[in-house]
Image 1 (cartoon, rainbow, N blue to C red):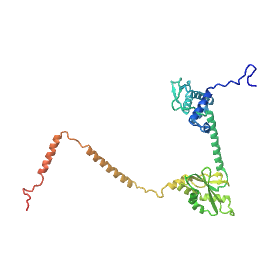
Image 2: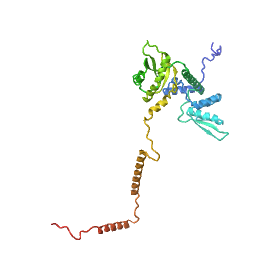
Image 3: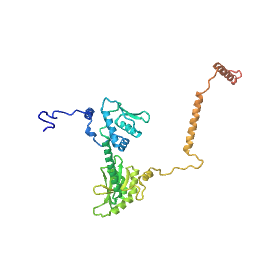
Length: 360
């Protein structure tokens, strides 16, 4: 039987629900996504369109924040509305409205002095549409991400606290384009210094490189503790080569299983080594110290710099004097003085006592 149907009425079979604001918003979003060739399903990921500050303030007062978000979404969906004015509220709540308006692509402004100070929100050309995810959804995504990060940190701590014996090296962030053959060629001197062991080099899915040590032949029986001791002895040399050749960002001991899963990660500063930073610093440091100057002495660079500076200063003063030569107040008097000086030079010139050079 149809709902509310009777002999005198057909019930709700021929009726349809009217489209409300939420229905109109969804239809506008659908048309906008179709016009911009956007797949809404592709945006249902872990992307968070809100700032961390907005989420932090929202988590402090979820119920009130959801009410303000609802006001924002109704305002954003109404094409005729251009301004939204909120009632007066404390500074912390106004800060949340300003941050949320920025995430929506709206402009906001605080108006009137206290205690009537309130926030007004405006639509500008940069506004397109409201974020598709709500604040509550983004908080859940953020909490899940934090839980995953915490589990990763715990896993790394567990790997460091594992008692598995070290049987290889782990290189993180290898140099771009580094090949296994190139790495083997660089580390070959260190490999040859350890007898009875052979080394397999492999790339992990995490883009890290592992160098696993194992007995040279299946018949060779080497204890795990002996392999660990050999690796600790050659660690400083391997780390030095990795640093000087810039093969990777870090190099540390590790414990690997048969499937190359990392069971334990070593610390950079353990086993008497000073870590990557110290090795890289030693590699970058000059092999000989710069000569020290005695008290009261000047280095050759200081002397040369001073002479060049003095020559440059004299040249600038000479050019400035030429360009700034004072002009005569009376040019006629100046011409007369030059003529008198020229006549005086002519009178003082040596004479030939009236004799003339005649052809012989």
